[in-house]
Amino acid sequence: MKCKKIICMVLITAMVFGFGPNYIQAAEPSESENKSSFTEISEKTPVSCEETVPGREANKMERQYTGRTYYVSDGIAACSEGVERASDENTDPNNAYVVTNETIMQGNISTVGEMRWYACSFTEKSKVTILVQMVETLDADLYMFALNGSQLELIGGSGTEGAGVTEYYNDLLEAGVYFFAVGGYEGTGAFAFAFYQNSVDVDYEPNDTLNDAASISFDEDVTGVIDSPYDVDYYKITVSRRTVFRYGITSSDGYTLTYVYKEGEVSDINEFHKVKDLYEFMPGTYYFRVSSPQGKYSAASTYSVKFTKIGVLSSDSEADVISVCETGKILYQTNLSGTVHYVNGNPIDVNYSFYKYLPHSVGIQEYDIRIDQNKVERVIKVGALYYMRSTRPAMTVSDRPVLELTLEGPNCYTIHCNCTGAYAANTCNEDLSRVTVLIDPETGKLIDILEPNYYYDLCPTGSNSILFYRGGYEMTKL
Image (cartoon, rainbow, N blue to C red):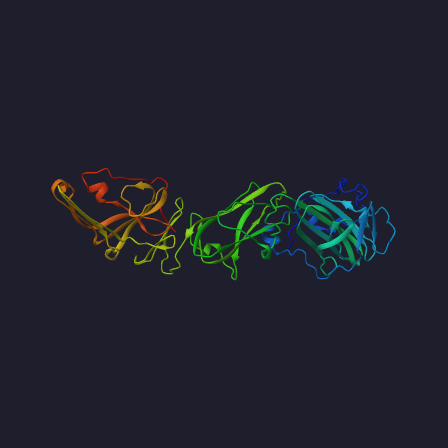
């Protein structure tokens, strides 16, 4: 089923524009032309473009243009054989009718091989869409020409075999002057066309079919327009690693952003893990479509699409227990048995060793603090916070969201600080089965011991400290 245009037939008298006052003459079609045949262009019945438009194929040339070469000079159009100027009807480009955005017009092919000419002009790069319908007795094609000096050069069109078959053309055209013709191939009769032109946010156009899907990147602000009743916009994003991201659209016109499928296979978006609109995608290329379920369109009203990357995951297929902190873009992975651990795709290393022996005339300081990853049996708590700085870090970083892990295992954390003389108060000997650490998401390495920390919590002397805050850094299971 075809997507029907949702506005009624309007007969437009076009105004002459500035590429030559003699080129264009406005005209209205005859009342005798068959309006009822042009269902997509004239019917007011709304049809969901979500269901119908994506199958439309533009610029299909089943047969090539074999007609004359046309020239335009001093307001006089003449073919290469020197044919005299035609009558005031638009059967040669000299008398073409001007069209502008949302022009809807009817015409008639009265003899086989006749060409009906129209023209348009753009001051900046524009996307052009033309849909031509015809009666069942007419097989007509659509040809688009660029004006190069005085010559009209064929640059594209739509030439589909069969009487009464709709022709559909869209392309991205540079600023300039263009002529297009509806040319009768076989038969005669009435036709109608709808013309749309848009110069707003055309960087990703034309992307009206899956094959023309525009490549976009994570965290890129993508803007576009639905510029005709027949328009849909396809985008594709390539995932090189197992990735968690969200996607969304902002539109005042009710446009939707729909997952289509992964390259090479059809699948439902709900097959992917989802929590709070976050999705986990494996490596591959994924396609999405912006469309207008209500049939709205506008060459001026933009939408905005964004794919926000939360982070990458390890390719370890067993590590499928995932927690996410979207605010901090932190992804924690483990398996059901809790024997492997990753953060943002990096293996987590909680091993820590600090040893220092300081003999003084007034006493001895000996510090031996260790975390043995081999003795860690389980992670009993996963969290996130914003780490600012500390005076005794294991790794020097600052001002970033970090992963917080509470580890448990017999004697996995030991504090053996033996001090004598003037430093005797600093003595502390603990063999602990639980410790909370901070992990750098970018490397998987230990930044600092949060608690208990000998320097921040247990040592009675000194001015050591750690600075962080937790607000807004919650972890959720994916």
